[in-house]
Image (cartoon, rainbow, N blue to C red; front, side, top):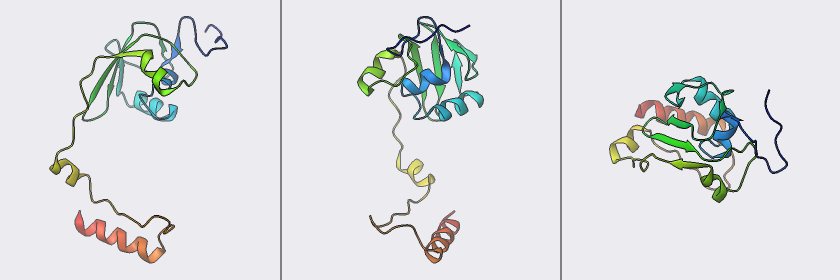
Length: 138
Protein backbone atom coordinates (compact mmCIF):
# COMPACT_ATOMS: atom_id res chain seq x y z
CA UNK A 1 0.00 0.00 0.00
CA UNK A 2 1.34 3.41 -0.93
CA UNK A 3 1.55 6.17 1.65
CA UNK A 4 -0.74 9.13 0.99
CA UNK A 5 0.87 12.22 -0.54
CA UNK A 6 1.34 15.22 1.67
CA UNK A 7 -0.14 18.62 0.71
CA UNK A 8 3.28 19.75 -0.60
CA UNK A 9 3.32 16.98 -3.22
CA UNK A 10 5.98 14.84 -1.56
CA UNK A 11 5.65 11.21 -0.66
CA UNK A 12 7.53 9.90 2.32
CA UNK A 13 8.93 6.65 0.89
CA UNK A 14 8.07 5.96 -2.76
CA UNK A 15 6.84 7.52 -6.01
CA UNK A 16 5.86 5.87 -9.29
CA UNK A 17 8.70 5.95 -11.82
CA UNK A 18 6.68 7.50 -14.67
CA UNK A 19 5.39 10.29 -12.41
CA UNK A 20 8.86 11.06 -11.08
CA UNK A 21 10.38 11.14 -14.58
CA UNK A 22 7.85 13.76 -15.63
CA UNK A 23 8.19 15.83 -12.44
CA UNK A 24 12.01 15.72 -12.78
CA UNK A 25 11.57 16.86 -16.40
CA UNK A 26 13.39 13.89 -17.90
CA UNK A 27 10.35 13.64 -20.21
CA UNK A 28 7.91 16.33 -21.20
CA UNK A 29 4.81 14.24 -20.48
CA UNK A 30 3.96 11.26 -18.32
CA UNK A 31 2.83 9.42 -21.45
CA UNK A 32 6.32 9.78 -22.96
CA UNK A 33 7.86 8.52 -19.71
CA UNK A 34 5.49 5.53 -19.65
CA UNK A 35 6.28 4.69 -23.28
CA UNK A 36 10.05 4.85 -22.67
CA UNK A 37 9.67 2.49 -19.71
CA UNK A 38 7.49 0.10 -21.72
CA UNK A 39 10.05 0.02 -24.54
CA UNK A 40 12.83 -0.84 -22.09
CA UNK A 41 14.70 2.46 -22.40
CA UNK A 42 14.64 3.10 -18.65
CA UNK A 43 16.67 1.10 -16.15
CA UNK A 44 16.48 1.43 -12.38
CA UNK A 45 19.49 0.07 -10.51
CA UNK A 46 20.55 -1.80 -13.67
CA UNK A 47 17.21 -3.55 -14.26
CA UNK A 48 14.49 -2.79 -16.80
CA UNK A 49 11.74 -0.89 -15.07
CA UNK A 50 8.03 -0.77 -15.72
CA UNK A 51 6.26 2.59 -15.37
CA UNK A 52 4.45 1.55 -12.19
CA UNK A 53 7.66 0.68 -10.35
CA UNK A 54 8.15 2.65 -7.16
CA UNK A 55 11.33 4.68 -6.77
CA UNK A 56 13.19 5.10 -3.51
CA UNK A 57 15.85 7.60 -2.49
CA UNK A 58 19.32 6.90 -3.97
CA UNK A 59 17.93 4.76 -6.82
CA UNK A 60 20.00 5.04 -10.00
CA UNK A 61 17.83 5.75 -13.07
CA UNK A 62 19.40 5.26 -16.52
CA UNK A 63 17.51 6.65 -19.51
CA UNK A 64 18.50 5.76 -23.09
CA UNK A 65 17.65 8.71 -25.35
CA UNK A 66 19.22 7.26 -28.50
CA UNK A 67 22.35 9.37 -28.92
CA UNK A 68 22.56 10.21 -25.20
CA UNK A 69 22.52 8.13 -22.02
CA UNK A 70 21.22 10.00 -18.95
CA UNK A 71 22.13 8.73 -15.50
CA UNK A 72 20.17 10.24 -12.63
CA UNK A 73 20.41 9.44 -8.92
CA UNK A 74 17.17 10.11 -7.04
CA UNK A 75 17.70 12.72 -4.30
CA UNK A 76 14.10 13.73 -3.60
CA UNK A 77 10.74 12.13 -4.30
CA UNK A 78 7.92 14.25 -5.68
CA UNK A 79 4.72 13.31 -7.46
CA UNK A 80 3.38 16.79 -8.22
CA UNK A 81 4.82 19.22 -10.80
CA UNK A 82 7.39 21.68 -9.50
CA UNK A 83 9.18 24.72 -10.93
CA UNK A 84 11.95 24.03 -13.42
CA UNK A 85 14.65 25.26 -11.05
CA UNK A 86 13.30 23.04 -8.29
CA UNK A 87 13.04 20.01 -10.61
CA UNK A 88 16.83 19.94 -10.98
CA UNK A 89 17.16 19.42 -7.22
CA UNK A 90 15.23 16.14 -7.38
CA UNK A 91 18.22 14.26 -8.79
CA UNK A 92 21.98 14.22 -9.15
CA UNK A 93 22.94 14.11 -12.83
CA UNK A 94 25.89 11.79 -13.51
CA UNK A 95 25.55 11.87 -17.30
CA UNK A 96 27.83 13.83 -19.57
CA UNK A 97 26.72 16.72 -21.77
CA UNK A 98 24.32 15.98 -24.61
CA UNK A 99 26.28 15.36 -27.83
CA UNK A 100 25.84 17.94 -30.55
CA UNK A 101 24.71 16.80 -33.98
CA UNK A 102 27.27 17.24 -36.72
CA UNK A 103 26.29 18.35 -40.24
CA UNK A 104 25.85 14.78 -41.49
CA UNK A 105 23.47 13.83 -38.68
CA UNK A 106 21.42 16.99 -39.23
CA UNK A 107 21.19 16.20 -42.94
CA UNK A 108 20.05 12.63 -42.23
CA UNK A 109 17.18 13.86 -40.08
CA UNK A 110 15.58 15.23 -43.21
CA UNK A 111 14.85 18.66 -44.59
CA UNK A 112 12.74 20.95 -42.51
CA UNK A 113 9.76 22.36 -44.34
CA UNK A 114 9.27 25.97 -43.30
CA UNK A 115 6.10 28.00 -43.65
CA UNK A 116 5.59 31.67 -43.15
CA UNK A 117 4.29 32.53 -39.71
CA UNK A 118 0.56 33.10 -39.86
CA UNK A 119 0.19 31.28 -43.18
CA UNK A 120 -2.15 28.74 -41.59
CA UNK A 121 -2.37 25.09 -42.45
CA UNK A 122 -1.17 23.96 -45.87
CA UNK A 123 -3.77 23.40 -48.55
CA UNK A 124 -4.21 19.94 -50.02
CA UNK A 125 -2.19 20.98 -53.06
CA UNK A 126 0.65 22.37 -50.91
CA UNK A 127 0.64 19.25 -48.73
CA UNK A 128 0.95 16.98 -51.76
CA UNK A 129 3.82 19.10 -53.08
CA UNK A 130 5.62 18.82 -49.71
CA UNK A 131 5.09 15.03 -49.62
CA UNK A 132 6.43 14.71 -53.18
CA UNK A 133 9.46 16.80 -52.24
CA UNK A 134 10.17 14.64 -49.20
CA UNK A 135 9.74 11.46 -51.23
CA UNK A 136 12.12 12.70 -53.94
CA UNK A 137 14.74 13.71 -51.35
CA UNK A 138 14.61 10.38 -49.47
